Image 1 (cartoon, rainbow, N blue to C red):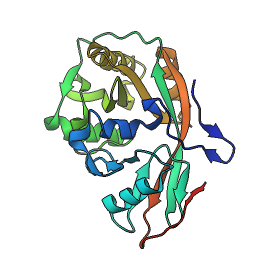
Image 2: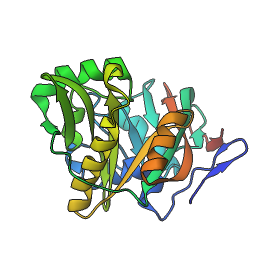
Image 3: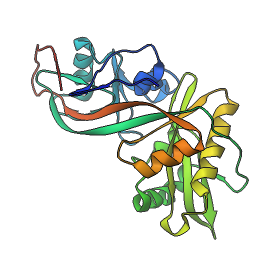
Image 4: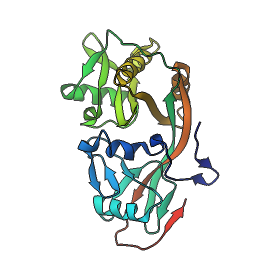
Length: 248
């Protein structure tokens, strides 16, 4: 297991493994067609996924590119980052965990249906009731999303978010409160994993570090905790600065 956690924050470094900087490797790889990019900084469109990324979070030039990309005095979300340059304001954040498939039993779910743009109103309604994490009007553009319906109503779903060379993230795993305890999330995670493996990728996922029930579920299915990291929301400087990156 790889971990960058240490007392006082997360050590931000450019690792050899693409999962160490998954958002960047997605935006510069399979999701490049979605990327808004300036040099060594990129982000997803605001209605797809509200995250940006840096090719090297330790490089001042990458932060300068990010400021050019999003504009002065603008809030943006990043992960994983442990240092911000002088003049950048930290306005929010949290702790997350990353888990990878090491023993998951992947199998198709015959009852699962493919979800697309026409299903977005129902998806957003389910997300509002279950709060699995960020899901926006065009998040379905990121990959394959599967759902289970009961009497025509969407009651559970899971799908793909970040996709980088060799890896695809499973995300938006949620079940209507009235239908929990039936194994729907498990079936959908396994079905999503089957599709991911079919194209030669390995599933991984993220969760909030304090979401113990979800982490336990994923570990019981065959995922292994790989790392913990800090998620930051930062605001770009209103004016240019020349400061070096400072630790949290």
